Length: 91
Image 1 (cartoon, rainbow, N blue to C red):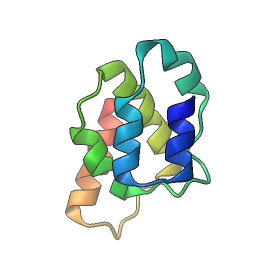
Image 2 (cartoon, rainbow, N blue to C red):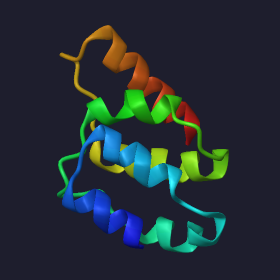
Image 3 (cartoon, helix red, strand yellow):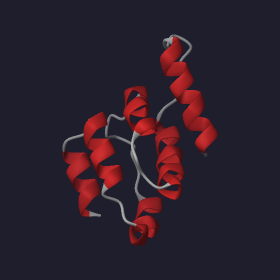
C-alpha cells in the first residue's frame, strides 16, 4: 500500500488522516494486514481520526489497528479518555 508507506515515513496525526482518506474499498484486504506497531502512534492520533470523513468500514478497521498500539492510561486528560472510549466503541 503506497499510501501507508508515505504515512509510515512521516507519521503524524495529520498524515494518518490523509492516509485514511486515500484508502479505497479495494484496499481493504491489504489494510487488514498492516500494523501500526513501531511507528509511534499514540492517543493524539484519535482526535483528528474520529472527525475525518471516511467510510465506516475503513474507520472500523483503522480503529482496531489504533487500539492494537494505544493502551489506556489513567493519567490522560478527560478529552483523551473520551477519545479512547469512542475509539473502542467503533470496533
